[in-house]
Amino acid sequence: MCGLFGAVGTYDTATLRAIGASMIARGNHSWGVAWESRRGVVRRERVVGPLPDGAIPAARQAWLIGHTRYATTGEVSVANAHPFADKIALLAHNGAIYDHDLADGACDSATLHARLSRYLLDSGEPLRVSAYGVALWADLRRAGEGTIRVLPLSCRHDLAVAVQPRTGATYVASTIGAGLARTHGLAIVPLADGIAPYTVAPFGTIRPDPRVEITLAPRQVVAKSDPYARAARGPLGPVPNPYAWPDPRVPADREAPPSRDDDPRVPGWLAQEIAMERARGAGRRKGRQ
Image 1 (cartoon, helix red, strand yellow):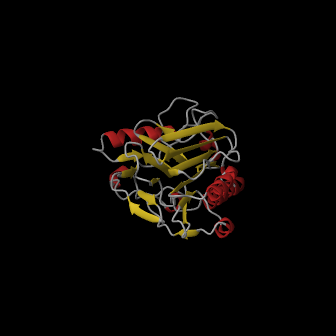
Image 2 (image 1 turned 120 degrees about the horizontal axis):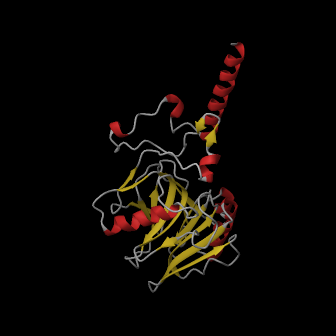
Image 3 (image 1 turned 180 degrees about the vertical axis):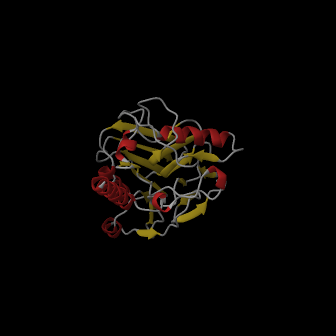
């Protein structure tokens, strides 16, 4: 899994660098950071390799989004390093995109960025994707907002938000350990599970983001060439994705309700145990015949 981190407000450089360093364990194939200065200038840096000390700029930015990549789909390269950006949006993603439409060697998350940019240009239809995880993004057409936008792609999105009460600086990361929070005087902001997009502003302010409407497409079969697909297959086929969730906005005739054994709410490790027990039982029955 990749690591996401970011900050809004007058963040403490040492705190954000400590959070960034803790993300190296989640991904060390490449890293990237992007930020908007107080003057509204957006800069981005992407490098192959683990995140080094001092890579995060000093606290003179309106917002910052960072990413440490663990490559599951696509080769390790600067082009596949997050955040992705164009003139419309900037995005970093942790998770998997199942219905990506990119050539071999490209990162699946680039599909999400491209679809988000097209959606922002013409939002007549909901943003539709078959995926899980969470993304941090920024609308580059709205300089000076001073917010980070969050795009959850599953009900159980892997993200934490914390605030420094003294300054109001707010930090976003895949994980913020209790020890790190105590050391840097952070208060964890409770988040509700769901797929509703929201924004993060200084002083731990969480607001719904009505500008983005997302529809999670039914889960699709991942290409066999995808290394993530190979890792996710059990003895009797694909293991149910513990992060996916049936979208109530998808008509019932488009996706059959999950059976007890294919319930996406079943944790991955439990689904594997069920599949292995089935295989052992089938072997015993075959041996008795």
